[in-house]
Amino acid sequence: MRILLAADPEIEVPPRLYGGIERIVDGLARRLQVRGHVVCLMAKAGSTSSVDVFHGWPGRRSQSRLDTIRNTRALWKAVRSFRPDVIHSFSRVAYLTPHLRGAIPIVVSYQRDPTLRAIGLAAKLAAPHVLTFTGCSDYIAACGRRGGGDWRSIANFAEMDTLKFSPSVAPDAPLVFLSRVESIKGAHWAIEIARRTGRRLVIAGNHADSGPEVDYWHKQIAPWIGRDGIDYVGPVDDRQKSDLLGQARAMVVPIQWDEPFGIVFAEALACGTPVISCPRGSLTEIVRQGIDGFLIRSVEEGCEAVEQAGAIDRANCRRRAVEQYSPEIVVGRYLDLYEEARQRLRHL
Image 1 (tube, rainbow, N blue to C red):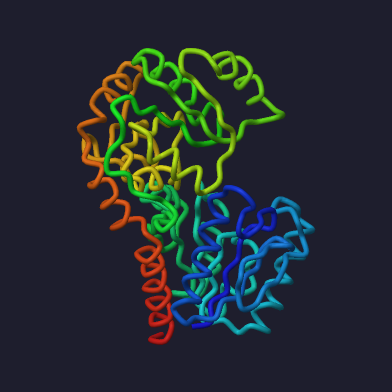
Image 2: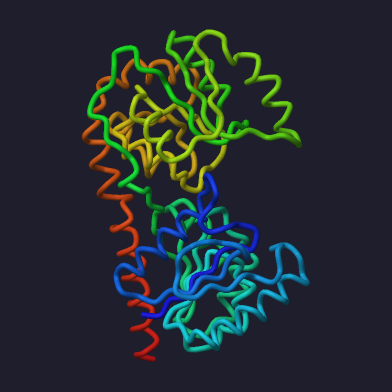
């Protein structure tokens, strides 16, 4: 197949350090090529993903009306020159407007809460069986269905080859918080849980340098760094991430919002590391209570979970990650969807 992938104009594919959607698009492109498909990518100019054909978006801002017009035109030209069998967009559905009444199947994937008005309009404009939406979790797909259209749930994947499985850890193994250090990720809960249980906590991830989250960092996180076994190591690369997760008793990221997916949770399981988080968004799909980790509703429950984490079968965590979130499994699900979409259009 000839497959055109599109990512938002603000993000480079792949990311220079860490990213969600950018990593998924790059990993998907690479593995589609390995399976013999021809891939065209539209993304931010300067992206270095190794694809067969690349087009940089001329407009740099998703929310700009002028850039939306420019990017819609650019996508139109790319489709005419590349002649894809399938268009798969992780970007704005508005760019696809000229193709909604066409004969090329379109898949639009959402990694965050969908804009229901845009979804509903696209679903009404699209010719029968042309447009399919996917969400990165059942939670996102359920949100999207409120706007209309045909929705499927296809989870994100973690790069299993770069994540080393650790079958056991030391009795005094630390806890790890690995995510953006901001209020919705619950770093303050992780600190309190570590302090109450007497466990070391390693915090890894970037933090805000401007905006309201700066106050959060300075008032609730920074004062604890270097005290009571709380350490901050900053952003980490893939090797460091694998090492951190592999040596941890548990990854403690007690989210305070409805997480769309969170690749880091699948990455922790891939290392054999139990996850301690909260039952919001997609976490109820990723973490099976008492099997892959624990979903908590308070700091007190978090402390109990830390004490019980040693009983979690780390091999079970790795097995679940491989069976549900390995690239081969997820790319296969997308390819099945592409073929299903093509068959539906052929039989009209």
